[in-house]
Length: 108
Image (cartoon, rainbow, N blue to C red; front, side, top):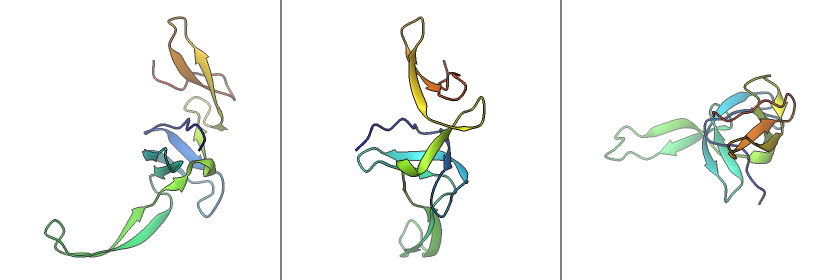
């Protein structure tokens, strides 16, 4: 299990597999499985049984988790796929930094 440097709400691009090149927003993280739920990526069909909550039931399409190693963070400043670096501000706060353009990725 590696250290996950991607957070909920980050914009990521898929770098390998069926959805290569697709960009999406991270909806949820699964750090124990090293996986992410990305908007519009890894769509699967699921058969839903009728319940009181959803009396219709049927077949629904939804996102399934994708391994974190198959995606890269997209820098909001330069728009490129990038690795994540760490840096400290003058105030002592630790922030994420784009390795391509050295811009701060976190909202300060």
